[in-house]
Image (tube, helix red, strand yellow):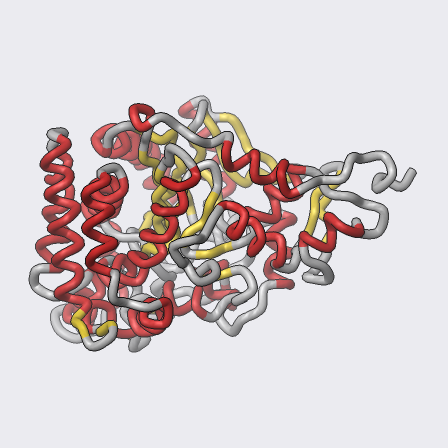
Length: 442
């Protein structure tokens, strides 16, 4: 039977209700992280594959058995593990992602991730695998990195356009931060500020200058790959103006082309033939949408800042264990303090959408040496850090200590990539093993 006739029509108000149901009292606000790393074989420095004897699938199988985690499956293939609210999942090129339950404090997140790392370490060692705190595959390129056997990734790889979409999917690793909101006004204010912060944060934490065994000329090749992946669904959302609402955000998502839908455990490719708006209006080959279809479609929409039941900020290179805590500290200090948000808005008030957009295209190459409307990004970053630090000190949790490492870099006008480039052309003498040792031990 044609299911267009058997389902109630999905309406935008149902989608908006989903966002509004995510309101949380300020006392319940937490911070979350998704932390991706690049697995390589210690002996060869090449990317770890999925299926071999010492590949990532067997690693997950061993870890699950040792630590009592459950499998996450796609058909008969293990694509991740879960335990309670925590997951260890695989990105398309076998990148390993930790997603732990959001916590009130950065200390709690740090302790959770360190505990996971300590439990994984002996099994990683047995398999001869290292996890790199780095933003792009240092030696293997996408041509030699096979997709994991997850149906959605195969469809995405065929569909996503842009000259570096394969690099983005198979080679890159990033860090995402999740922030709660109390109401629509608070959510959209954080959304606007986060979008304006993203190029500065990309610059501060740029950490992917060496790719395929050579210096690329970019300080964040990961960020460059996203700039060259499917502009229909990546980058800024709209004009990030002061009047942007949930409905505006939803409209952008609805207008974007669909990649696929799930039905009866099968992925049905749409390959951009229709937008979600058209799917809602007309259906597709006998299928009509429900809220789960929208949730899937929204998760296949990849702006640098994404609205879910939290504000998800997605634009950072994977960095060292000390620096990823700096990312969390900056956002906590800014977004969980009204005065700090006021001060960031004041800092950015004279810059236009075009200024921020141009900066996004400059920072992958130049990082902190970039300029915005004639002003030095190095100087603006110092102001951002000052605002975040002052806020954290006022909270009385001691979490301002997590800014120490990024302050050490930024006050000297450098990012992690600058250290790597200096060593690559100096002490390391372009030795990939020395780079890998550096980014696995940080």
